[in-house]
Image (cartoon, rainbow, N blue to C red):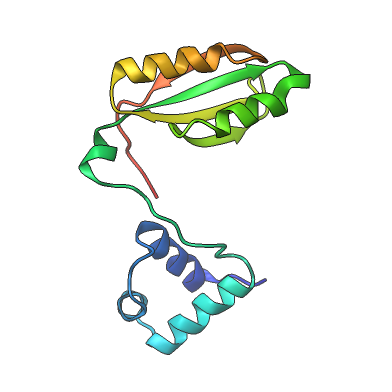
Length: 143
C-alpha cells in the first residue's frame, strides 16, 4: 500500500471537503480528472478511504457548546460504560486512551444547561469512577 505525496494531498483535500468534484480535485492537484478518479478508486480498494461522511457545519451545530470529557471507568465495567455512551447522541466521538483516563468523549450540546446535565449523567453511569471536563473555547484546526 504505497501512498505518495500526491495521495496525501488528495486525502487532505477530501478531509476538508469530501464533496469536491473530481474535476475540482484534478484542478487543485494539477492532474487529469481520470488520474484523480483512478487514485480515489485505488485508495478506496486499499481501504485508505473507508467511506465518506457528513460533517455538520450549519449554524445550529457551530453554536453548540462542545466539551472533552475524560472518563475513568471501573475496569470490569468498561464495556458497559462504552455501551451506555454509544446511546447518547450528544457524544460525537469516543476515544479509548492510555494513561490515567480510559476514555475521552467529545460532546456537543445546544446549551450550557444541557451540557451540564449530560456531564452529570455520564458521571452517574454505573462503572464511571471519575470525570474531568474541558469546555472547548474555540477550534483552531478542524480537518
